[in-house]
Length: 464
Image (cartoon, rainbow, N blue to C red; front, top):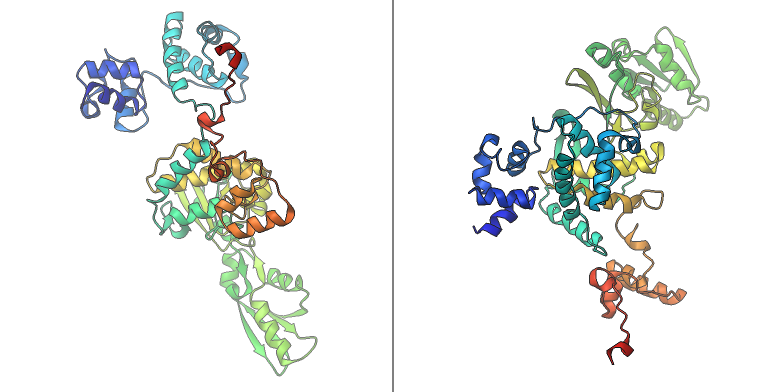
C-alpha cells in the first residue's frame, strides 16, 4: 500500500490528515496501529488513545480527554462570554472559523477539563476541530435524499427476515431486521409486535417483589382467565365461578369481577362467591351469545397489555410488556414517565406529539440497523425522520404517503401506478413545474441538484 493510500485509510477512520501523514511517515500502517499501544505514538499525535481507538473501530475512553462536568439547562452563550469560552470565540472570529455554538462550547469544556488554557493550545485545537468540521459539511446542492436512500438501502439488503428475541428477554418476541424497518418507513398504524419498556420511580424500582406486584396489575385480565363459566339452559342463566387463587394473584376481588360485568350492563346477583347472570330476554341464542361474550370481558389491568414480565437491569427492575398503551401507562403514579418508552411510533405521536414521534423513528430505525451489525450514519436516518414528520403527522415513505403526494405529476408517475397518475393529471389539468430530479431526467433536462442547480450568466458584449 502506497503512502497516499495509507493516509487515506487512516483519514477514513476519523484521524486528521496531518496526523495520518505523520503516522505513515513514522512507519505506521492501519494494521500496525491496531496492535500498537498509545505510548508508541504519544510523541507523534496529540491524543494517542483516541487514535488507537479510531483505528480499532471503537470509541475511546481517553485519559487525555476526561469528560468535563456539565450543568443541565446551562446557557451556551454565557459559557462563551467569559474566561476560556471568550478566548475560544475570539480565536474563531480571528481565524474565520464558522463553528456552531455547541461545538465551541464542547471545545471549551474539554480544554477546561484538560487544564489547557493557553491561547496557543486553543488555536491548535480549534485548527483541528475546524478541519474536521469542514470535512464533514455537505456540499451545496448535494442530493442528500439520494445519498441517504443509498446509505440506508444498501445495508438494508443485508438484513435478515427473522424475528428475534427482544434484548435478552426470552419470554417476549419482537419483530426486528428488515420487517421492522419496513414497518417504520411505512408508518404502520400499529407494529406487528408492540412492546413497552416501563421504568419505575425510585421508591420501588429496586424492590423485586413490589415490581412483580405492579407487573401483575398491568396485565389485561379477561374473565375466562380468572373464572369458569357454566351454561344453565333450564334457568336461562350463566354462572360465573371465580378461581379465588387466580383472583388473589391479580390483586382483585369477586366484587371487582361483578363490577366489570355490570359496567357492560349485564344484570347479575351473587350466591356466595358465585355470580349469576340472568338472561332478560330468554332465548337459547341470546344465552349462548352472552356466555361467549362474557368470557372476553376485561376484569382488570390495562387494555392492550397482554403480558408483563420483569427484568433486572443494573441495580433496578424494569417491566417489559407485550402490547402497548402509552396514554394509560403514563397516568400511573409509580411510573417514571421520562424513561418509559414504546415501539409504537403512531401511539407516541398521538400521546406525546410529532417531535417525540420523530425521535422515536430515529431511535427505532437506528437500533434496528445496529442490532443487525449495520453502521449507518445517524444523519441519514434523521433526514428520513424529518421528511416523514415535516407535515405535523407521521407519513409513510411510499406511494400512500410522501412519494404519492409530490407536487410533480411525472415524479408521482415515475414511482408507482404510472397510468393512474397520468390520467388523473390530464383530467384535472395539472401543471408540472419540472423542479425536481425525476421529472427533469424524464424530459432530458439537467437535474436541479449538484452542478445542475447553478445558473451561469454570460455577458456577450464583454467578449467582443
